[in-house]
Length: 251
Length: 129
Image (cartoon, rainbow over all chains, first blue to last red; front, side, top):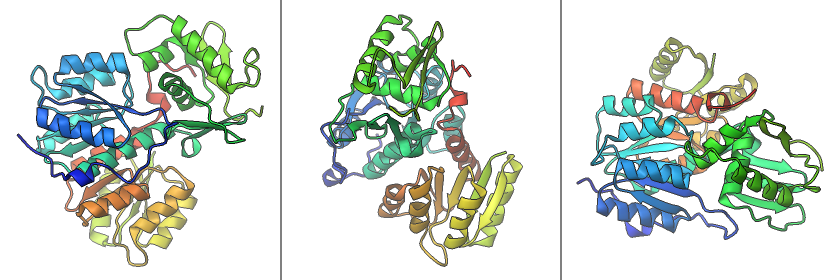
């Protein structure tokens, strides 16, 4: 068993978590109970929601069900190799994946990157460094093509990294995690159309095909973000195809 | 062809990085000081920056902050500094990845590719456009 180099004081970082933020969800594939506990404490103390899976099968199911914002994968899982987890998730999702493994050979690290991992941290690990890498990878994932990850829709400014939405007058706009995820996905495509199928796949996972929930959430987003939800100027419907985000339209 | 800004004052390491990048289809812009790197980042608009922290004129942390204040250019730190506090300072300044010297060239290349490909909407499934 490989323990992290960690001290309790290092678990809570200097980052403050606004109560208005929709907390990010980290999915952890790890079968070692002691490391599970440490990772849970580390991430929960720093404002994340945590789901832990002790097998590849459970974790892949959790990934489809919970749609995490970042995934941490141990390679030595009891039922399947963690590399297969990376391949399986990467087949349907661009979610950031960090490998956390006791395997130190260069060939193993390269295999993880070649199959879609975004970062690789070796055990024993530094908890603050792991947290810094998770934050960096999420920042990079969210910002995509947006200027510093901030979306301006009329008088609402949405910080996709912090998941905070505010009107110009300072009032908070409360968006759910799913609503944030829909906006993030639309924003990554710029002003191009995102098909219903692509949006559903990225937001809910590969096994959901019903577009009714998507329509409900799009309607809810328009009520919160559009001046006139019946005549949207930012979240546009492309009939029979999907949706398109217009970022630079002035309300 | 992606452009890589290599910020490194050790000529030997800079040469290795140039060969590695060019052999893998990248164009290289080199800078051996912080000030030159800031100018090259603005004028050449690179797709990735590899930054050494121990630069002769100013600390690489200053360079990371300067780049990050005006763009989200992916920044990979390549440094002989191995203390946790030094890594955390780089990430806090806006670095995206950190590799300690001495480094493995294949792993550096794998991490460069991961940074270059991250967040590219064209790589996502199902887009129309």
